[in-house]
Each structure stands twice: as C-alpha cells, then as structure tokens.
Length: 195
Image (cartoon, rainbow, N blue to C red):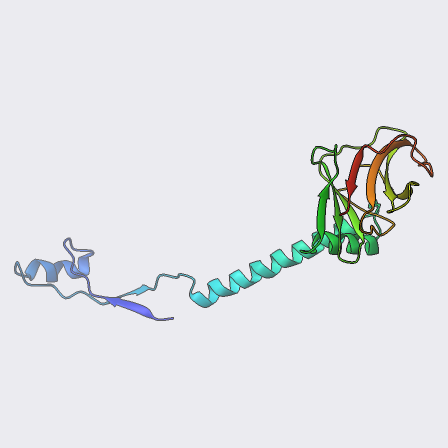
C-alpha cells in the first residue's frame, strides 16, 4: 500500500518553529514547509468486491438448498419423496397437458405427463372440513365405474394420482366422509376429460 505525498503552503503559521520563517518571508514568496505523508484512502478493490459477491452467492445457494431439504424432509409432509419427485417431473414437463376441472372455477387443474402419469394442481381449493376428505376418481374410457385415484385434504398444492390417465379418461373430485369409500357417494361434478 503506497502513500500520497503532498506539499502544503500554510496561510497561518501552524506552530512556533515555523513562525520565524513565515514572518521573514516576503509576500508572494512561498514558504517551504516539511513534506507531509498522508495515508491513502482505503476503498475495497475489485478483487475484494468479487470475493464478497461470490461468498454471498454461495451463502444464498446454501440457504436455498437447506430450505428445500428441510421442507421436503419435514415430518408433517404427507407426500413421500418419490411421489414428490414424480409430481415435480409432471408439473415441470413443458409438453404436459393442462386441463382445468369443469366446475372448479380455475382452482383445480389436471396435469398429465407424456407417460400418462397425472397430478392435480390445486390453487385455493380449501381444506376439507373435519371428518371429510377429498377423493380423486378416475373413469377409464369405455367404463362407467370410477376408480379411486387418490385422497387429499386440500392443504397440499399438488396431488399425484395413483393411476395413469389414458386418453379419453375422465378425472373427477368429490368430497367424502373419512375414511374414503371405494365408490363415490355422489355424481362427479368437478371433472376433466383427457382428449
């Protein structure tokens, strides 16, 4: 680290040792003063700023990974890790079919991946009342018998269906008493048909 050298010309005598030299000087003639070494102003350089940016980036990535692992492995999570991974694979597939359930006012959509695995995406459906549960039903093409494809409380944002959804199949939701029955107790009103 270097220093800056500066020569100063005093307007008022700074101390008694120089007072005589200043008094003997003629107007307009500079009075030589001792050289003053000033410390250089300290500012962070580019390498320091770059190192701080990299450290902040690593900290952000680490905190994000920690939050993701903590949320995925929390004990109150009802979705096991493989189901969560399969749900994410379907939801993030750019070529997946997204079909809103008729009657759900945009709160429920059926997302079907290329391999016919399906996820119900929930947005504001609401939690099922005490003693009740939502049940997803699958009606395969050519069949009139609904098959239970999953149960959920409505608190989750995505529900992986237990059966694949082939073309021509219908998927519907009913609100049932807990434990969920093997057949729906009422007609399917929230329905999506995969073309």
